[in-house]
Image (cartoon, rainbow, N blue to C red):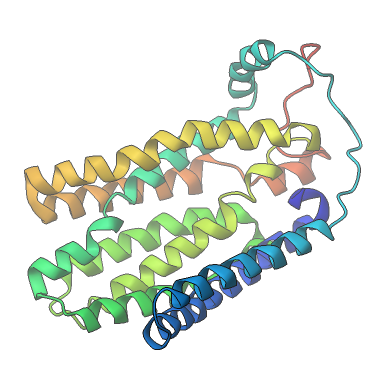
Amino acid sequence: MIAKVIPVQRRGIWSGVSNSLGAFSAVAGALLVGYILETVAYPQNFAYVFFLAFAAWIVSYVGLALNREPPSPVVKERISFVRYLRQLPSILRRDANYSRFLISRSTMQLGAMATGFFVVYGQERFQLTGSDIGLFTAVLVGSQAVMNLVWGMVADRHGHKVVLASAPFVMALAVASAWLAPSAALLTTTFVLLGAYLAADSVSSFNIIIEFCQPEDRPTYIGLTNTLLAPLLGLGPIFGGWLATAAGYGGLFLAALAVALVGGLMMSLWVREPRRVARETGKQAGAPPVSREH
């Protein structure tokens, strides 16, 4: 629906603005919840918080209900679920650029294996206080809010591949800054860079997928991407924890830095910008020929 409602040249800034507003709203909401829990007696305080959450959801649903989804120009023939599953491997065989994207994206996600250990590492090395962790959280949210807008503008002008290709290099810098930080104060740089990485991921990781294929194939590409990349989201932190235990934080950071750089190079040099392919071919980039099985 996003692909239908938002023009391709505006999806980046749309994602950036919406994510930034979400980040600022999350900070404001956390402050409001803290104030209510401290100033209103139990159980009324929780009742107020739950009611406000309910009201926020209602506003969200109203906004969604007011959207009008344009009709699909092409509607696929209804097929059985088994037949649908059988045709998925053919997409990977025919669409080489999309397959390269999946491999590159998997490597990038594995390169982010150290993100969950930055605070733990800082706690063990610098004996962080509660105020330190609060500062890092604020810096992380603020960095995401700002960089969402920056990456959104970059994506609209140059394509989402540029944003995603930049993200692992930013992650590598975050890992290096954590590893080399001489004090807790300078560890703040790590969370600035981590926020920039997360913003790039949130702006472009979805938007690039819907540029790889024809409109009628978008649901398939989105579902296939999420399914194939999901194991890396779960296994990455587990592998990172094993590395931290077996080789220490130095080994974890070295491995994460190397894998992130490899993922960035793969995305930069191996994957073609779908938007450019679309201009060259006169159709949606990466769209395989429609077979009779469809």
